[in-house]
View 1 (tube, rainbow over the protein chains, first blue to last red):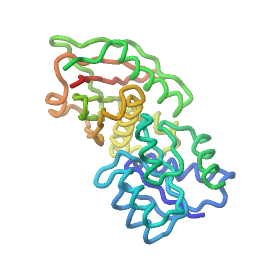
View 2: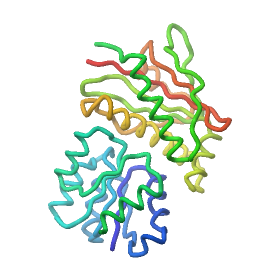
View 3: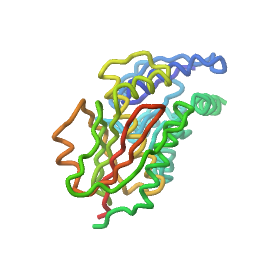
View 4: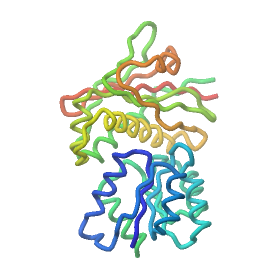
Length: 121
Length: 154
């Protein structure tokens, strides 16, 4: 399965990429990393990922808008929102726009692995 | 407009504790929290990340830390890159996480900006922070940082 990582923090992008080397996720291949929603749209078209980790608070195009746009392009894509925005209304909004899961920051390696495994199943 | 209460500051203290424990496995120690009044000098360390608030709230939240704390934190995250750009990225991400986590209590009507980050002092802080912010002093391992919370309800 192909994974696209979307986050405005290069530290978080690298961390998610590193966690992908977990032996429980052998079938995941990172096909791109984007630092905002606009870049994610471009990479999405080029790489056609099956899974996306999506930050919400980003410049240019935020994660909710990007989630909605990506879901319109491909309703089957699994979008896991990875965000610090911890209010219920935001999670519900993201899910309504097409996200399939939500993981709050700060997260542990284990929590991200489990969330991705759940998405893949 | 009404200042948030001292009890509500606990939301940010809890967010700080959760951040360090989740990311490093080691809790931060809160050295103290107080209302900064009058001519109290606000703590500014080497790198600072600032979040502006809007919606039903106004004000800002900033996280400021020493270079050494950030170096250790990046190592704990297995991030080998230690440039100034990575330090700025780290303080921005932490400020964003603390503000974002606070929405669990304050709700979605607390709009938070993307972080603004800087090295050393910035005049931005003078205009962003009002006269009576809360200061939360942090120690993680032996390294220092601070969170400044300046939030009012509209």
